[in-house]
Length: 444
Image (cartoon, rainbow, N blue to C red):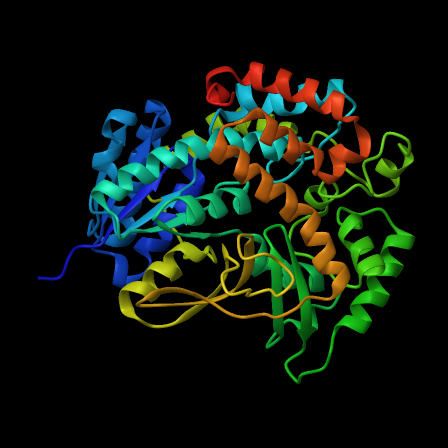
């Protein structure tokens, strides 16, 4: 008898994202008869997601999926039991108190941030409070679904995925939205829509700073010369939302996967207290993530009412990787993704094997198979290494639970190091750890 596919959604209270992933599952014939386990620690949000996914199951899947919800840590192991796939979308500490703390305390020390979920002092703190929770997940999975494939969508992607692959036995791949939309968005923003169809690309690097290494049209013509010309001209002539990445094209020669608001804080170049005019020059949205959180919280009541009150709600399969990965594993029909994996065997020659890299991966019935990329252009490898250094040191700190290791990660973080003395870094760290309370009480 064929074992029934079970998909467990961790952080299922992220209702819109849960709808996208599980709606995709219900649009995929090979997955439609699965068991779905929804897990969260928020009773209200879990109930909302259960109601929405049940409606979708009725409307687009003829009630073929079997859906259960599991509330709280005491039911977590049952949610995970016998899972074929586990999708992770948790946020430890939420907007309040943790995101607010990550922005407001560094601001007192002169550190301004935009998103603070991947690098910077905010990214470090987010990793350090999330990894202990993932350790508990891994412990449970080791007992009740040791062969599962863990699909991580939670940031900071490289630190969390790197930790899971290095310090647990759970097979993990990190998935981001930015790879599959990178070249499409670039060509649209430069008025080169006619070059999209049949284009060929290579993207590799690290999460949120993976590089569009090559881009050719359907006939094999190199599109970069025209991209470089148009990007420089656009930055010189108008204010727009992607000025930092277009400046990357000018200064480094290549475009990268994640947005300008993200990349403005991954380096020491653009947010500088001695050069406040750069904020206006590059149109950098400081405190952008808190604004988004406030907007989403305020808008959620209306959004949830619309979603939950619509008995005819439907779904069209999205470009999220999760369902395509599951389908490839279940059917053994290969599919290609941009995945976050360990740099085992030096997939990217320039980086240590312990680094978490974002590279093309083949997925089939035997799992995730990363591809060898080779060496990057030296300046791109150097940019990535400034981030990898912090990622590896943060992972080390999460493993040792020692504050002195946290400080070392902060010392090597590019933006923070460009602004603060080591003494102030330590004071800021202590204040952040104390403010986060039980979320970081394990660090001594």
